[in-house]
Image: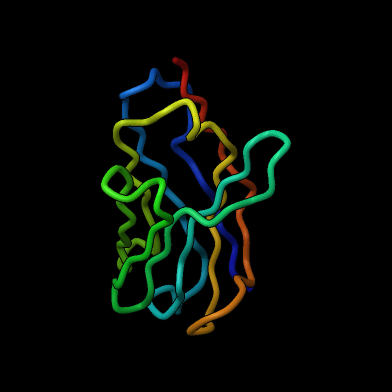
Length: 118
């Protein structure tokens, strides 16, 4: 079982930056594929970014060039650096993890709210 705890959300003006963190339990963090998802009010949860065990990264088109996902295996933590934030980025952001190479995620955090004001 893996437990994920997100932090770093908050209120920021458009054009500002936030850095989300997700601390994971478990001794095999380095082998997990980690992802960030978000869910805006009235919308379905959507994929934002992912990083695999070899630190290959993947992003949804709307955040490319603005968001950066990274990981610190020694601290069992994954980060999402968000720059040039837009009101459309307002959502609850969730961290997710899986030991599978591909497919769905098995473990989810409780979420952290990000609000971008115009």
